[in-house]
Length: 270
Image 1 (cartoon, rainbow, N blue to C red):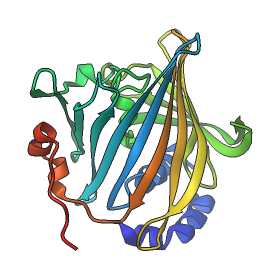
Image 2 (cartoon, rainbow, N blue to C red; image 1 turned 90 degrees about the vertical axis):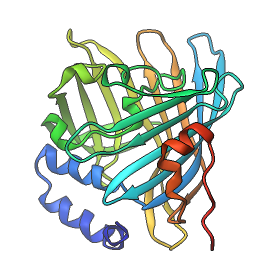
Image 3 (cartoon, rainbow, N blue to C red; image 1 turned 180 degrees about the vertical axis):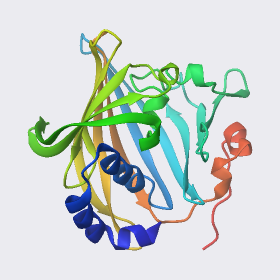
């Protein structure tokens, strides 16, 4: 995985020349989003309703690689209403990811079935589906415009505009989505979600992208600030990443049922 980013600039240059199909573009983004091998950070999610009332959630996030796959663990720290809740996502090869949630009030964990992954993640406007990425082979991807201009948070981006229609529509909460992938970073800076009547029901915007270094000195693109807007109820959830550390090894115990129930994982001995 680290070798991929050692040649990060060369890879992006080569794809700028050869990436002509929608699947090519999404494949690059999926590969970029699977590194570094290990990472941990603090995720701040702020819910804001149409009247301006807000609530802030603090979550510890842990990421680790396993044979090219990406595992993610979320530990809810605040507020008290969600403290102790934990979510575990384990990526699988050629089949649906495993996702589990631990509810401290019930003192039990349960597997999240596919039908429930369209539900709210911790009471936010992000769904469980939003907390992962979709591979290029899960959707019928169509290039709509190349190039396409879009402005997000005051910054104009030159993008590929791509329409993605899920092959298994029962697994997602929308009929199709339209994404603008920035040509410099391959990151989707805006996504629009539509229902079966072609009504836009939700938007995602990447408000800030930073190039950051891991402890090894390798540089990564980081989606530091993001926003999901529910157009049906007027609620928004802002997400920001803080205290991030890339490429510092953490215990694989974070990605086990033991951690999910206890919230405990051993520290790596230096």
